[in-house]
Amino acid sequence: MKHIWIIGTGGIALATYRLYSKRDDCSVRLIGRKEVQENNFAKVNSNDEGQISDFIIKNGIPDVVIVATGLLSNQSHGPEKTIASFTSDWFDENLKANFYPGVFWCKSLTAHLKRKDAIKFVILSARVGSISDNQLGGWYSYRISKAALNMFVRNTANEWRYKYPQSIILAYHPGTVDTNLSKPFQNSGIKKLFTPDEAAHNLKQNIDNLDDPKIWSGQLIDWRGDIVQP
Ligand SMILES: NC(=O)c1ccc[n+]([C@@H]2O[C@H](COP(=O)([O-])OP(=O)(O)OC[C@H]3O[C@@H](n4cnc5c(N)ncnc54)[C@H](OP(=O)(O)O)[C@@H]3O)[C@@H](O)[C@H]2O)c1
Image 1: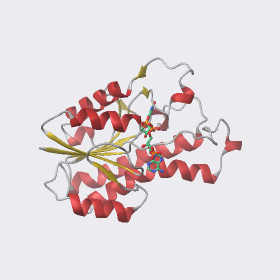
Image 2: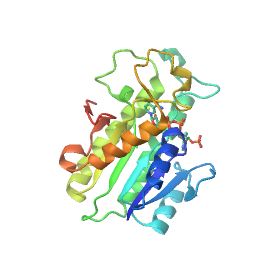
Image 3: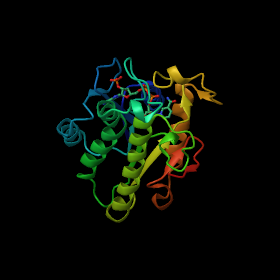
Image 4: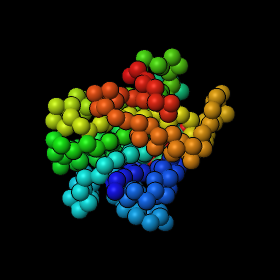
């Protein structure tokens, strides 16, 4: 039995939870900050290290973790088009959604890992967090919080490589997916818009294909399984 934890209850997280839940060989937990009506839901604030640590002590180490929290805009803020719109408050909100959940879950799990463990820890990032890919600018807080996340993933992979050589940490770009996060931006020349179910299928397929930690750990890959240069 594979133990899968999905952090977040948004479009991609829910579809991924439902996909894994169909399998008899998987035990799946859906973990979020707000109650949702799904079996196996657990309420944990992913910005609270104490709550995360308690959950891990109670539930042990899973085989797969998928962190699918994120923020691009809300009712009062859109992504910044110019540096003139950058504020520390909005950047902090982005860090709380795009960066800290992956960091805190990873930190707490790492404290319990053993050398022989082979976990797959996948954090939803975004291609726009790639520095080398950035030709357009804008979206300051989102891009910078995802770039920081990509660096966190690479840094942790370097640490895990010698302490937990069979485990993999990965940043993942799902493509553009029809969820609340992308809704306000879907008419801006997007070539392909995935349904959440398609995105969940692609994500699971890519996780199934993660074999050699030496190849995959520390990378940012996209939904095709191609490595994106950070
Ligand atoms: N959709 C796309 O086109 C697309 C493209 C590239 C990358 N991604 C990435 O994919 C991931 C999932 O996005 P999605 O499309 O599924 O978005 P979504 O439907 O808007 O879901 C976002 C999730 O993040 C949670 N969240 C927001 N702020 C949080 C915070 N401070 N602490 C904890 N949880 C927080 C939300 O929780 P509440 O419901 O409680 O607010 C929700 O569960 C994100 O990392 C996103 O950047 C998405």
